[in-house]
Image (cartoon, rainbow, N blue to C red):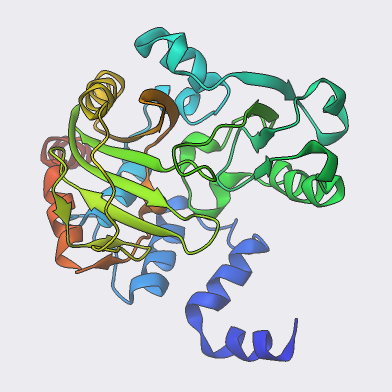
Length: 310
């Protein structure tokens, strides 16, 4: 560890926790103890699981108390496609070019000049290849093998990831009208109803997020990444279609974020996420975290749990 990192390790509790967590030093903690510890380090506040109010608090409560087995299939990037295709149609699924158990199995000869490699069981294990002849295969191997070796569950206790079989999948490379990226349209659904849309853009340069109402009014708030009110993101012509798909996909769940891409006015499914930023996102203003918490009504589930514990 470099000296500057060593100093940071001793003076910055959040950095120290992240380092220890990366080395899996907290695996001995049960989920509730781990989440309380991480929450306090992150926000300098106690995690209120008896009466959760904010969006982040309620996501932590759901991790511990809502173990719907359907979540496990939906967070697996390979298996989710099968379910989603049956609901909104195969034509809205980004084509899969191959699935492998490890890097050495990948048949690069069969892949086109452009493609995307990603892991089925985590967030961030992605390699984007725009030109196969210039792909740094060793760098790609290192990134994907690191992801394959890790169980994503341990670093946020998102229990649906615990038993997913780690695999690599290749998908067709796609771009939107920008010519260099895919803007992510993330629709937050609560009790089967879309309530907010988050658009992620410039992810490989200076990652930003703009938030919108379902009728495309800009929301002056940010979640984890900066927002830019001067960046005009046109309302997608297929927004109503996206919202309908989000509603169809979310109707079985208390809360889920359904992600889509829009390419040449056609909607493609991205993924489904049950714990946005693992429930550790920082909100500006903080009151917006309460607003989102109000959209997620857990009162019945909490009452039922308390009754069962008597």
